[in-house]
Image 1 (cartoon, rainbow over the protein chains, first blue to last red):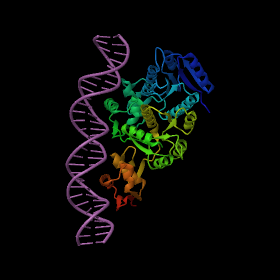
Image 2: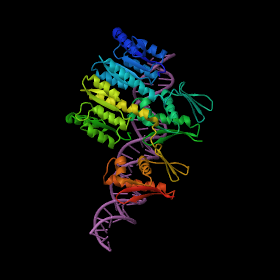
Image 3: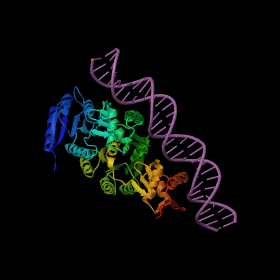
Image 4: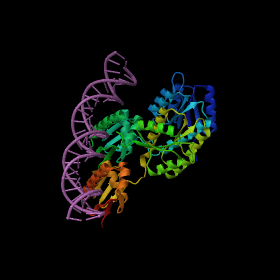
Length: 234
Length: 234
DNA sequence: CCTTTTTGTTAATGTAAGGTTAAAAGGTAA
DNA sequence: TTACCTTTTAACCTTACATTAACAAAAAGG
């Protein structure tokens, strides 16, 4: 049934606790990579594909949040669970801001952790069907390579896109001719949905329209109160 | 910028706690329906569309899990958060089995609850990409696409519909040739039923008639005191 | 018929969302 | 530090929408 064992990156500086947790997870059929600090955690993250990261918050040199931010920059999708000291409310809130999927207060119950892991991995699995690893798009006479972040018109000189421009255009392309809900872009790209992020997004829509107007058949339409629609007219 | 406030069903038997929590959520821009027990909770759930359910586990007559199961039978999508007594591990595990999205131990921090709510609702927003709800209708020589909110005549240039126009026409189309009760539209679309919303609806009926008169076979008839009927004459 | 209630329709108004540009703020690397 | 690039914030303007008012017409009920 299982394609491959799910891979977990565990970053935990306490060697005793870390080892025990690692063994426990492995007993439950996960493949676990254990890093002893934030630096090592990031190195290992870059080297491999993980299905889930479990990050201790309190670590020397590089705390869990900083690590999470770096991870998010490289890969905005991978689920993250934080381990926080008991009752550190600020940690919890901060965690959600960085895009945590969940958190656990130490000491925690191992069965509960297993349930969370299962729930989160399954959730991601269903999500990832729709926006698969697609990063090359044909948009009218344009080519978008969202991995290299460039947009080329008629095979000419590619224009370099900024990260936000790139992700927004990619989302629009994923929904070509269909509605791309405002909320989706805001939560996926900006990880927050408020007045200012929304205005920021409008600014980026304007930028994209400027790029795209080389091809009159390509346009970004607005659906008032709902979102945008990238249409290619034939 | 929000199209509509997110709707939360709160089922909590403790009247004091329930009221406080309800007020707190409402202060934070959610629309909250408060049910005092499982039975009432299920009734209210059936009557309305909610974006999230918050269920107390310990309730007389019908506990949170039973309620959750019933809710899942009707709608497997809506996120559920359980409120469990402190350290009741079995509850937590049971909750996940029933398909909980999260749980909170009482007493909990209200800010943490808010973060969870936000995170969960955002998560759902990203999942809802290709929900196969019905949004395309054929109305005589018209095509209504109620997701992209346009109405096209004979495959020509589509006319954009406003949200209210769109919803109203969609409701009429769902009841094609049949009575679409006034009250239904008012409660579903305007979420309120008074003199002014009723007049507002009449204004929208007029607008729709104007659009639809391109096809003489299509008309919206009034049934005095009852509602409207979208008929397609052959 | 006459009266009351409901519906039909158009226009005016107020508010919210979106378009656009420019300046400010953040971040990074030389 | 400067210089450069990206992102956010601000400002101003336009468009889209929903509501309300006003008045006309139709239906219902005596």
